[in-house]
Length: 460
Image (cartoon, rainbow, N blue to C red; front, top):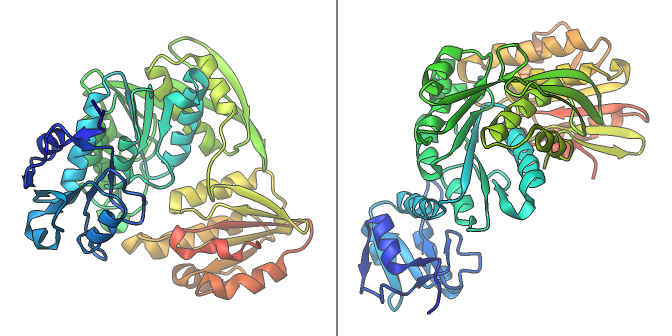
């Protein structure tokens, strides 16, 4: 008998949907897809819709690509094709997430770690990947791919899980209230981590307290015996403590209150060393790795806390961290014609920008540095002051540095600064100027929110 990823009966049970022309309920599909451009052979195609797209308009492409069945919204049934299995639901996104939850519940031996935070969640996720790969082998570990940490991406990652996985590390992002809870519901985590609460997306939340409460929604479906991992010191700490206190709590950070305490030793552009002190066991591990900055040492303490919650030894924690490498435009370093380009332009908010500047100030020569600082988005009423303070911090930390401000917010802030700052309205206008300023032996540092597209300034 053929083994299916999901039978038609299971799809109906999970979604509460209704099959049109009931198929053989013991038959089924071998995967779940939402993109008609992919190979959909044998798949259930779930027709998602959003502000700028509606996959109900591409059902014919999914069928042509091999889809076995379609999941559509009842009000759009007229868009469905004949001669194919069709199940109708009220909301296809909710159905997609219910299918993910159904699959997650089948994996009874799987341990899930959920990670969120204003800063540090991707770094912490990658550190956890390295730790658990060191402990159990790479094939036993799944971690969120790329930036798939949203309402569609989290279920997409859950569908990749199988009985061979011992550990799943699921990153959860949010920029509006109410987005974390459904992600936690799907994941049913054994461990939930908040890496940091800061002002990212404060335009949409209004207050730091609202951001903290949204992050704490990661605990909403944490298993009763689960572990809540939180910073030892953070703004709105009381909110974190109150919500985490319903579970086993592990705290990480730099203070003596931390269950796992980081002590930063030294660092440079290409790496650093720090110690992790494990309160429960009394062990101390010195770690030398390719990342640097005190903020990354704190992220390592967060990852170590989550790992020890699942009984990973301090030895495996240390060995795994030493192997960690971050993806994408996160402190990506490139040498070109004798110039060092440091690209940290994947994302930015006031806290991450400040952390990056203090890290750079540990070792860089300001007289041979160009700081290219771009707009930080979604800061709302705090935007003007936040951009001005970042520029002031840069001027104070790096005497004699050359600063290039990019984007309308940074440009406005630069006009109110007493420092000599070159401003451009967008990244494209700055390309030739920045490349022309850079000299052999100098460093160029790029940092901004992703939408500013600073990466185009970096030479190919």
